[in-house]
Image (cartoon, rainbow, N blue to C red):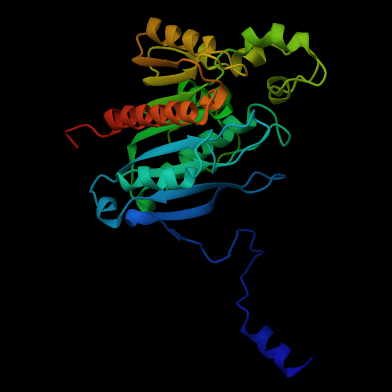
Length: 325
């Protein structure tokens, strides 16, 4: 062996066992206003699947020094459960830039990638969301997170996952299997939820699915029933509205009244169910906009999206930033 090769080999550090975790140097991104981004943090490794990652946005160092830590917002992307990623939301042109602006207010923000329906059907994505919540709480000291002040926010498929994670908090049948003890000991409960144009009751979609069985609808693929009728028990288990009870957290539901992909009545019915259970809720219906708050003009899309963003942050501020803190 050439001397140069021997020298390189001699310098390699050898562990006592195979190393399976990612040892690539940690990448950091410096956003404006003192916000630091930590992209592609692995929060879960499920055998047979890609490593599951999230992007973390940390507030300025002066904010992170708060004794109790900073409140956490966990965002879940849309994409019909079959696509999408942690760096987009509707028509927001630079979503990472927006999340960094939210972090600059004093929040820790996590945007999560989860398994898509082509990788694994329900409840895999829900398990991933609950695992991410537990992982972030487990690492609360490292990232200066206040474990008690956590909110979920999701759009479309992500809204269904956010609402279901919140309403099924502590439900054994939907707890991720095979959690290591340190994560199993953590809670997956949250203080509140923001839903943008979400699905809350899959049982109401059966006529729609039956009308066009081929190709299967995205919700049929997600629920693993393809062109066949979905099992009622599976549809109920995946429907946040069927898990509502008086222990659930407050919710803000925002929906466009011209939404042709997910009818706004989904949010109306969820708001009614929460109200009947005594859960604080706010329903905001935006007229003349479609899914993703897309309007007939660029100006209408911008106005409706900015309104939804403003209402979202105001709701979270009221929920997680009480004057006593």
